[in-house]
Amino acid sequence: MSTPKETTLKQLIKKAKFDRVNPDITDKNFPDNTKNFEKTELIHFGKMMSSEEVLKKLGEKNLRPATIKELVNFAIHNPEEQRKCPIVGLGSVWCLDGFQLAACLNERAGDRYLSLGWLGRVWVEYYRFLAVGKYSGHLDTRKDKLPEILKDLKELWNVKNATEKI
Image 1: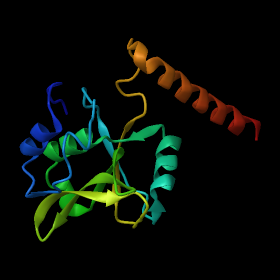
Image 2: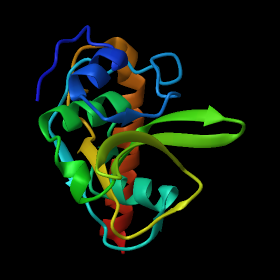
Image 3: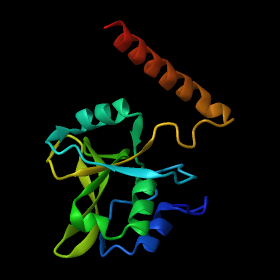
């Protein structure tokens, strides 16, 4: 699923041909530096979960939540998936009046809709979450990412060691 590096969120949304888009979904509200679109995976937990629980479970699977650009790019290549069930990308968050919101692909009245979902809610069992391999596209020579990669690797190592000791 590749898309040119210089693609803005606005350009991706246009290419996705949604029937409706929440007007607050803009490049200004959702700045996203995603340059390379990696292979994504739809995750279905099959139970009610908070955003925090979802993020924890994704981390346990060595996955990270998809950014808004990755979510829209997924919709471009899989336009009918959101008709089956709502799909959330927890990797890009915008705050409005103290409420943290993330992008969601869903269907309303037969229309493909790019909407916003409140992170403080409980996601019901039919929601899916778009995820990306935690280190997809990250293990490179960019010095600005090195501290983040090292921190994540240390956390994974500590979890692994704690598990082995039990």
